[in-house]
Image (cartoon, rainbow, N blue to C red; front, side, top):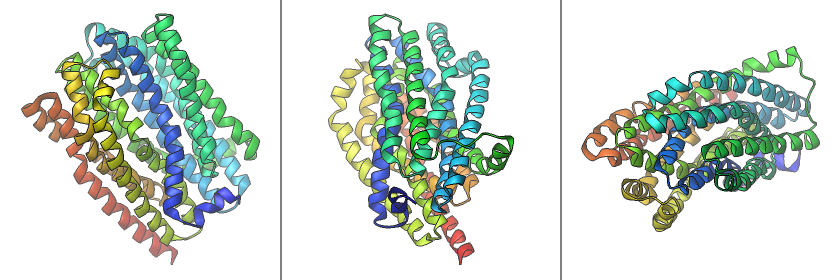
Amino acid sequence: MTQGQAKFVEGSLFRHVAVMSLTASVGLMAIFVVDLINMVYISWLRDPVLTAAVGYAGAVLFFTTAVGIGLSVGVSALVARAVGARDPALARDRATAGLVLSAGVGCIFAALVWLFLPAIVGLLGAEGRVGAETLWFLQLSVPGQPLLMVAMVGAAVLRAHGEARRSMMVTVWGAIVLAALDPVLILWANLGLTGAALAGWGSRLAMVVMALWPIWRRHGGFGVVSGRMIADLAPALGAISAPAVLTQLATPVGQAIITRMVAGYGEAAVAGMAIAGRLTPVAFGMIFALSGAIGPIIGQNLGAKRMDRVRRGFWDALLFCALVIIGMSALLFLARAPIADVFHAEGLTRDLLYLFCGPLSLLFFFNGMIFVANAACNNLGAAFQSTLVNWGRHTLGTVPFALWLGAAHGPQGVLVGQAVGGIVFGLLAVFLALRVMDRRSATLQ
């Protein structure tokens, strides 16, 4: 076991939670910065139809990104357990098989989404020119999503080996490439949404290279792929990743429902929701990263049979979540006017951004509680529980509240209702995760 790997089972857990979350968040935020950069440059074209189209497209692309997150959770957990058990050959084989399986699942899923894009765009409420622009952008972008999935799984393998910085650089380089290509293709070449899609392809290719190269050079490379290797890993990966994928899919389903509700209030409302939706993971990237960062910490301490440190890591993660939410919400509130100006937001679009920046963003803490609880359950053998909680939050915890407050307060009410519904499910998720820890402790005694 290397020094970086040993740190997960020794020393201050709060520090490890903070370090892994901070470094992982830089990498994870870079994924979402890609979408944010696209939105910024598209908004500079001063065409609300194109801005709304990117908003609709984001709800669809989030589905494929969610699948990648779910697959990375499973591969990371399995590799981390092998690392914790000090079995580098098993860790290598699991990483290899996990990447191959993830690539295959990604291709199949992306193909299915691409085939049904016209129907999906229609269900979101995108019509006329907005619908046509949304469909075109997605037809160009969706085939490149399997590359993103492979990159995300590769970064998760690096995290499982304690390589926080190199994992971070996977998506950092993706964002750098996109930041270089976007202005050239969108503005200088005047390709608009086509340029944004092509820049996204370049970004994903860079991420794949940066994910696989360190694994090859520093962690034993990859095993010889065989049917037996795949067959040995598939059941274990499916046991974790299938529920994790289903869990992650709940979020884009909820987002698609909200997008459909907001669509009835016009392009300005969709644009405002889309910008807020892209600001959320960038502003709270450390919270999104908790699910990936706390997973290896819990997995390795579970492998070492240290349930006391599993519990300590869980509570430290919630404390870290609270501190980040308070700090970032304050920054968003203070910077709300400049943020709106960057996107040339006016009227209703600006009103929705102001609502998000500060008062509404504080409620994201309850989403953070769900992230931490789900990560704990995924690594403690109760992944299906995470699935139930996440789907409950994005259906029962979204639709009734959004409909109720939306009817009284318009699009602002829809967004507030979406956030309020997370309170009950955040508290429920923590309660259920603590029960899982108690049951797992009993089996280790």
